[in-house]
Image (cartoon, rainbow, N blue to C red; front, side, top):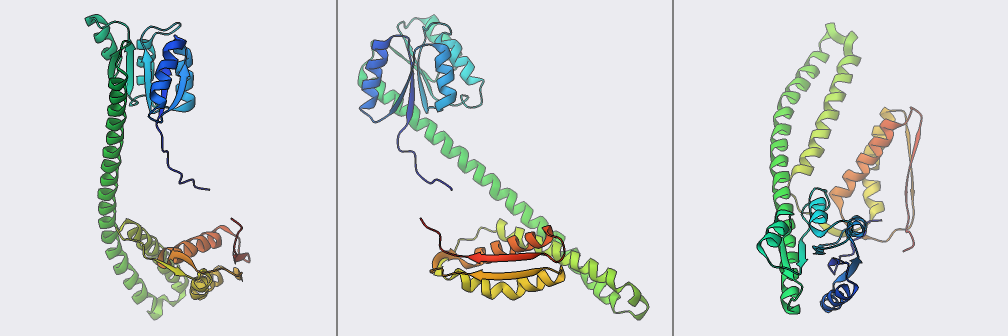
Length: 288
């Protein structure tokens, strides 16, 4: 089952060895609805980070076992922690502390005598910046996919043209009397070309930026419409296709896409089974 439930709250990992400070930070952040996880030392911070994958880490510099700067460095070299926002907590604001904080890979820092409102705004700013970064990355990835799709579609069209020429010459040669003994080989080559052309056609449909046309339709009706085509494919491979169509109410679907899905699934089944096999296409209404 695919879960489309959206994540409504951000998860913040508070890492501080002082229980009172963790309580203060937790109470402040819970006012803004954040989900809070608490760690009392560096080792626990690393463990809980991997377990819960927080959206932001509020990290004290001075902690037992592994200090905050070391934790920050370890997070930055891990794949999951490479880009997560890290806000360091420090009791000191001297030049050495500030430099070591940013050198470790922190996004920002705040002193422990902070104003709660300033803390809230810094966390909100860091989370918004990370959200924007992810959106830009998704858009860039989508744009790259579009470019790849356009290039691949162009290649598909270029491959199709010589295939059409070859198919035409094969049909022409297959009609020559002196080549009648090789007719089965011509038929085999033509079928394979048709199969390759069909794969290219499906690929071009996927590469094409086309909006879905959702309409409330009968799934059983679509299956019956393409059944003769499915039967023809099955007969060529000495297979049998049986329909067991139950009572199904009209559903919202894109007819072209559903037809293609059924054709692909059936053809894959035909190719995967031995000759004489049986394919059953069954529909029905499942309980929620």
